[in-house]
Image (tube, rainbow, N blue to C red; front, side, top):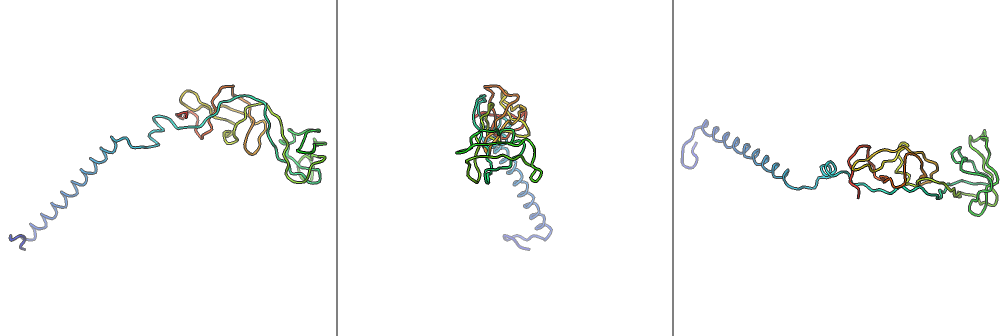
Length: 198
């Protein structure tokens, strides 16, 4: 075979082609290793690497024990409502419900419904809210997970056991292993995880 004015046999052509392909593949591997080395030295934003070195960015609130109100919804029909035992513990005769009041709260369970009967006076039908005054630490409901909250302990998250005294759709009143001034973590973290307070 004649290439660029020179005669070559098939064996020589195959050898030249194979050598060229091998050299190209070797150059590509060298190029990739060099580029990886350059990229690893660059300050590239990597949230996992930053979380491991600087800690996970978190949102927090400072714990302060206080008196405040939790609003519990009750579905009333014909001045009667059925509530669970947890709700019943927070209700009593004479307690205000919007424009009316609670007349009585049964201590026994209604056999038909398995609930406690609450009788009211002057309250319209529908979902109404009872304001219950509680003393404790008021935190967003999502901050309490499996009977505990996470707090800042230096640069790591630590777990504190708590009990929910009362809750509504957004907030929980909690008591337990907390003190005024503890910094409660609102973000989702695990105990012992390195954190970075915003």
